[in-house]
Length: 395
Image (cartoon, rainbow, N blue to C red):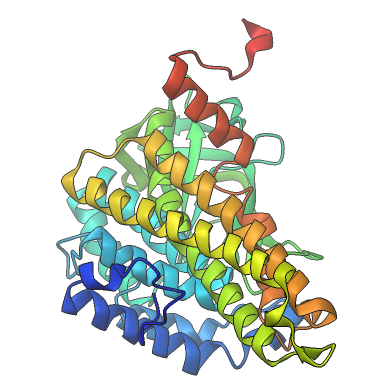
C-alpha cells in the first residue's frame, strides 16, 4: 500500500479500490511523516520524548477526528481515516496514539455525548491541535476491568467533586483537558471534561518505559477536584459510553498496526536484498524467503479485513466484536511480523539506525492497550457462544 505501488505491499492490488482523494490523503500523510518525523524518531524514542512541535502540523492535515462531521471537521470516510492512522504508525506508534486519543477518545465523546456549548468550545480547538486532550479511564488497580472503577464523583451544589487516580494515560502531561470517567453516588459511571489548572488536578510522567517511548504517558491525580456543572457530558451515562469511545480507538489501532508491519516488512525485504552472506544476498536463502512469505500472507489478510471493516463502519452496521477481531488480529500479526523482520536484520534489528526494533518494542504495548489480546479473545468468544467468560469466579 505504498504511494508508488510495490508488488509486495499491495499484493492484491487494493490500491485499485481507493478513490483519488484517498490516495492523495495517504500520500500527503506519508510525506509529512517521512519529512517531519522519521529523521528524528530514533533520537526521540531513545530520549523518551514526543515531538510536540508536530501537533499543529498534524492538525493542519486533519488528522484529529477526521471521520467526525460538523464544527469545521472533515467528515471523511472511515477508509480515509484508517489510511491516515496507517501512515502515522508506519512512522511510530506514538504518533498514531496521539492522534487516536485526540480524535477517538477526546473529540468523539464530546461530539457524541456533549452539549452544543461543549462541542462549539472544544471541537475546533482540538481539531487544530491548539488544545490537546487525554482520556482518563484506566486506573492503577483497574485496567481490563473498568467496571471496578474507584474514581468517584459526588454532587456539590451546582457542580461536582471528583476524587481518584488514572494510570497509563496517553497525552496526560500535554493535555489541556481530560475526559475523566467516574462513578457517581448512585453508582452510575459518568464522563466529565476536566480542565488543566483546576485545584487538586495534577499529572505525573511515567518513566522507565520499554515501549511507546516517543509518547507522553502519565498518571492523572484528582484530589477533591471541583468541576462546574457544565463539565458533565450529559449524554454519557453508564460504562457503555466509555466503551463506545474505546471502539473508536480500537478501529484506528487496527489500521495503525498494519502500518507498523509494513514499515518492518519493507525494511526487511530491502535488507535481505543487500545483506551478503556466503557469497550472496540473504534473500536467496529458503529460510529468509519463508519468513517474508509468511509476513506477506498475514499482511494481505489484514489489509482485506480492514477494507471490509471500513465499509461496515461507513454503513453504520459495525459491531464492537468486529472491531475487536480486527484489533486482536492485526496487533498479533504486526508483532509477529516485526519479530520475524528483526530476525532477518540479525544484530542490526536491535539498532535504532533501523526501524524494526523500535516498532517491535512499541507493538508489545499496543498489543495490550485498548483491550488486551486476552480480553478481545473473550469478546469474540462471547460473540460466538453467547456466554460471557468474564469474571466467572463470581458466577
